[in-house]
Image (tube, rainbow, N blue to C red; front, top):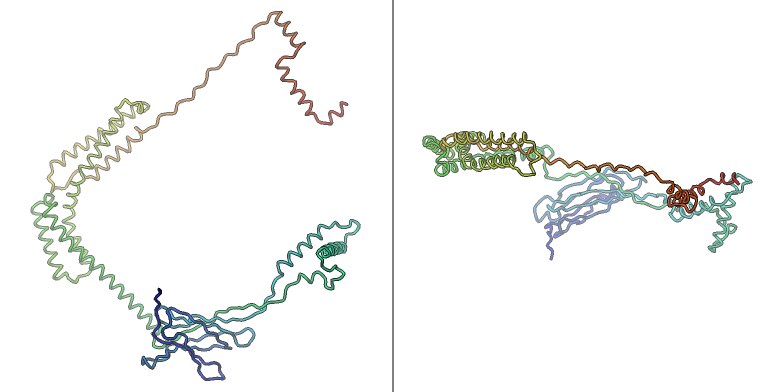
Length: 457
């Protein structure tokens, strides 16, 4: 199931046909109940600029002016001097506004169609056959190329059952010429000017837009002012409740009573003289209250996170010191002087923490702290930055071991019998080394160049 919006009026377009006929023609373009949004296209034949009126057909029933707007289409000029064909597009948008959206002039012009792909392929094949035909070496003119080309074409034509070159009355070049020209529609956009009856002029419209911007700016300022006023009111209620609850030990009784009185004064001002103040006044009031309340809030937050920060620093100190004093093999490659630096840094940080903590422990909660969580975190970062590179230093890579050099033994002196037996082996069967060298000798003879072999023979 689909639901469409329908237009409750009937809208027509009216125009004068031409200069000779003064009777106005009218046609209903968007009848009552027409679906919105919608578009319609109308065709006009005109020689010069013309006007189209948007008319309300049901104007008598609604007691309103029948003519809504007028659209002037042009200027334009036809290329052939005759009346031009124009497509005019009317648009009914989603807001129920009817307008002439565009106008296009349509002209038919003759365009030469390029050579078809089939004839191009046939011409290219013929050219290739001609190039492949061997030229007569006795002649260097183009006549032979033309004759060869004709012979090739004739053979191919006879094979395919086509008439031979003698039967053709038109040269072959005629077959590959361009086809007859065709008509193509040329589209040209035509300017359209609008005149809406009862609409604001350009100057009045610009003034209205500026007024709208001013009103939007006022709304934004009023919204921001309201937010700042609510922030003052929320701070008054929140701080008063906390002074009687978790902030009670972090403020002296005198300061507590003075701040409560100040909060009450601001609350009364909000509902009396400060009801309609500017944003800057509310910002100043909030800063005045925070100047008294922020130190109390800081003392509470420092007390809340101090123990956690101290625990982290103590863990960092103990971890690096235990690693420096350890006899574990993974730390044995670190030099003793480097380990001593780690131990000294840990001892210094521990002494600093002990002194600051002793000062903080004697202070009451309502006094400003001397041991801040930010300082503790900074000290832990200092210890980690110095000790971590030392204790995480990697072990040096082991050096590659070189094998000991092997001593070459001198050959033992041979007896006369051994020398004689060696002589027999050389005269008789060849030894293993000689056997291995013979194929190499044969290979070397095979690799000799042919010229050298001929000279020997």
